[in-house]
Amino acid sequence: MEDLESGLENEKRGRLQYSLEYNFRSQEVGVKQAADLKAMDSGGTSDPYVIVYLTSDMRKKYESKVYRKTLNPVFNETFTFQVNMSESTLVMQLYDFNRFAKHDIIGEVRLPLGDFDLQHVIEQWQELTAASKMEQERLGEICFSLRYVPSTSKLTVVILEAKKLKRMDSSGLSDPFVKVQLILNKKKWKKKKTGVKKSTLSPYFNEVFNFEVPFNQIQNIDVVISVWDHDKVTKNEQIGKVFLGCRATGNQLRHWSDMLANPRRPIAQWHSLQPVEEVDNALGLKSHFRLPLPGK
Image 1 (cartoon, one colour):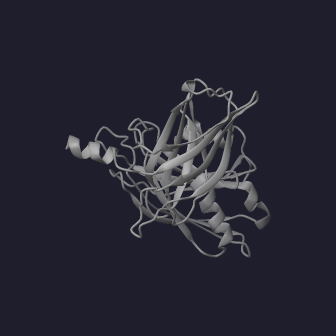
Image 2 (spheres, rainbow, N blue to C red):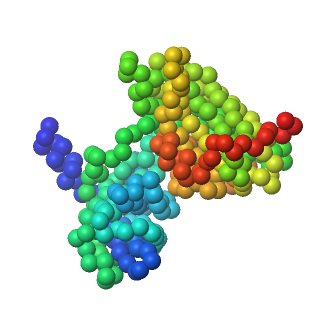
Image 3 (tube, rainbow, N blue to C red):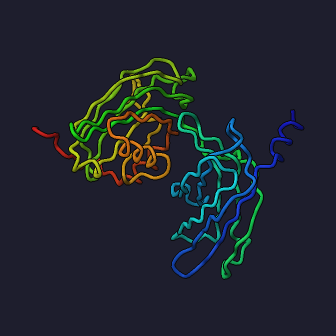
């Protein structure tokens, strides 16, 4: 078994070309291109994209565009960090995008920046290695669809199912339910929730929620999907959440953009749940600000 695991870790995953550039105000990381990537799809290709972050601030993650059906993507994207990088480790992870399943990690590059002379521009290739086992605890995944019809101002959110949720009860299970909340101009607006599914980490909901959102407001809202564990005795606990809208990034922004580009058509996609504090910080939510519902 040890030989098998060692063989998987040493498996060729491809190469990544990157650049590092330092100035007095910021530090820039350039993701140039990748070559000879491991094929993750049955067709012998992958749909690669890159996530870039510093281990000193894992809440701030950058994400590249997705490049379809290629093992040699040319990214040419630059990401700027406003913090001191010299005492941190830079992580660049290549993933294979999949709309209907978990995104598989192809490999990663980890650079202890204290080992580099950042006074000079650095540009080089490096072999991808197996992903670190010290990655953040997984909270689970959720699948839902979005549909917007401009002519009727109707936004439809269908909560389909979730899987691999974090265990919240002493029994090793959870009693999950989902809240769908709309944020308008950074203020809480409308919300609805599903029923509770008892003693499961892979609940099936298939519940439909309709919201009236005028077309002139669709660019100003965020849709927040949060998964909760129901508890009769103590207060309900949040397991994790995601948000979509024009302020989102990565897979969440892609899903939102696909919905807007395909009016009247439901667009379904899986998303990995993110830590509650991380999402709330990104949204800039202030719980004591609340926008009244129309007609109230």
